[in-house]
Structure formats: structure tokens, C-alpha cells
Length: 228
Image (cartoon, rainbow, N blue to C red; front, side):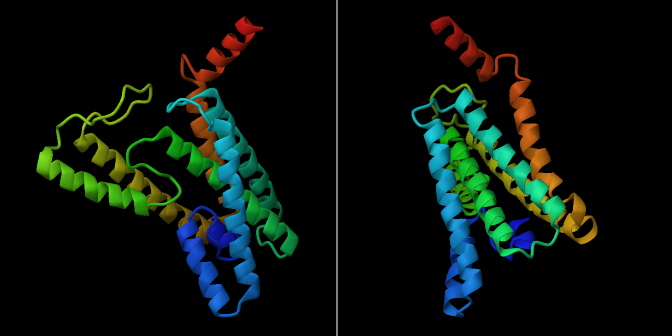
């Protein structure tokens, strides 16, 4: 979406964004380079923000991770409002605000998913996932796919062996690719619906978390009330 709507800038994929920045500088395209720099700055700010929320929290889904996800959803909601109001952004100030907000949201998400430490799983770039799939396949061939993964006891439902891990990694990759296809289709045929897609997905995540019988919000609130 950022590539379509924000002047061909990546706000989630900093490897691609850095390449675009280098190309823009090399070609003397000042405006494009500033857009990429804004995305880098926003992503860095988002990663710091996310780290502040989840610093020293458990490697599982906690109240603070839910809070950071809610803030990400709020930022994406603001972006959706901007894009509904201005399907084609012509004002430079609005463009920079949109780039920075989008990058902050993706920075928060990247830190959150990394903190959860699900083996080989990321949501903002796929290079690491593809690398992890290759490494898992080689390990499985040499040691056996059914061997139990050496992971500490965690509350999150993690893969129990290499075979399950590879399936999860491939599933994430396929979901990523299909979402890109769907995004391209929406932009081509129903572009006015495009801002709803990321907002809907992040809200689904929050609904799933809140619907859990023992979700961390209640436990945290109960703990706080007992302590007070």
C-alpha cells in the first residue's frame, strides 16, 4: 500500500527502502530520497517505541504487547482516514505525515513480532523467513523432521518439531504473497477499499487476543487492583 500510495516508498521493508534511497541519491532525485529517509526515520522511531513497551516483558503475549498492537491499530486507523479523504495525496506535508505514520506502525509491529520469538517468523520482511525455511529443511534432512524443537516452555503455541516449523514458515510466506496479490487487485479495481485492508487485519488480531478466556488484559488489571 505504501508503494502505491506514498510515492513508491516502502515503509515496512527497510532493505528495499534503503536500496530505493541509494538509487534516488545516485540519480539526483532529491524528493524521492527525502521520502525514503522519512520512512527510515519513522521505522526507527517505531522500533524504539515498540521496544519501550515490551522491554523486559516475557517472551509471550502480554498486556504491553496488546497495548503496542492497539497503538499500531490506532495509527493505521488515522492513515485510513487520510487515505479515504485523499485517495491521491498531492500535498507534500500530508505525504510526509503518512509516510512517517506508516513506518512507525511497521516499526512497532516488527519489534513486537521479533520479541515473541517465534522461530523463523517475521511479518515485515520475508528474506529472514526464506532463509529460515532453507535452514530448517537442511536441519530436517540431516537430523529428522520429527525431532522435537529445542524450545523453552512457552505460553504461545509454538511448533513442536521442524516439520511444523517449516509448515508455519511457508504459511506465513504464502499469506504474505497472497496479500500482496489481493492488494494489487484492490488497487486496480476497488482502490477506495484499500485503506480498510490493513485496518481490518490488525483489528482481527486484537479481537482474537481479547476473546481469549485468560487474555493478559484481565490478569494485568486484576493484579493491579489487588496490588492497590
